[in-house]
Length: 393
Image (tube, rainbow, N blue to C red):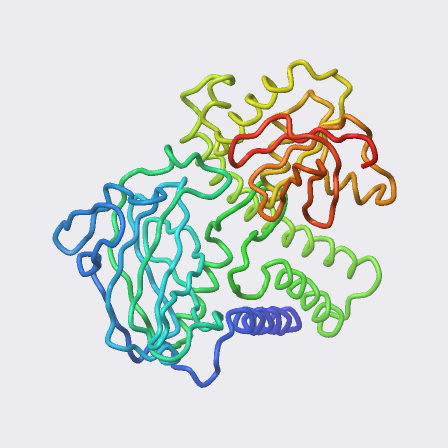
């Protein structure tokens, strides 16, 4: 009898955790009371090229900036009454990122929200978590583009199909479906997100899967103590088993994401040798810039300090990587480490795509980001400036 009561308590507790994680409103119906559906063929092509296939839209080309965009005009849909988005794509490439774009009444600008990668089948997203999803919506669109910093823009696109999309009123089914997509779907990733559970975007999200697993482990231990009256070693064994099962679930979820990212990598690079892969990297412009710099600095002594600066931290780190094995580092880090000490004379400062930096040719001083560096420009090609530090920096 105690075991049956324990199983019931655990089941009810875990169900409550699941409903809490999904943000289910207890007053909501089980199924949506209203929905608005759009077939893929109802979307018009704003960027790229596409052809209608019965009620679907086959996207076969990208437009400016390697982006495809499909839009449907709405008649002022009430955002608060339609918070659950369902979208369905077919054969969506692993190398593309998907975003939702919408416009509200009275707004000139649009709002862009990153969405989970669409598997073959329905995917769901809770727009109620997006602060801008309010008022009346006049336009809804999907944008697809190569994952920034990861996918070479020239290689990312492959044809895919927009099957359809829907907006639903809030319901238990919609909230739980959005939670499932959030936990099991694949999200846009950066260079560092391969090392961590979860995702690396600013998109509003449901409650963390890690937090819910820890709550589940805690509840199992609590009911084991209260109902089964376990103590000591017995309670410890239950905790170890529950923790192992929870950790295995998290590990499987992480492994699923890693496998998905590996699939994208295979699509991009499996047909190339190691030297060729460098030629097809996502930052090909930085690879070429690094080669250009090595050629321009070929007569500089090997021990000369080369410091890189850019408005983008990604650009800085990738340039540092591509300039190796030169004695290269980051300008901001060098100044932070020794703010009161001048840079060594004859150091090379590489400025790439930096706004606000200017060179006083009369005084031979470079100004920018609060720094004043005496010296000479030894190489220049927009957006690249190579500056050699003189005496008194």
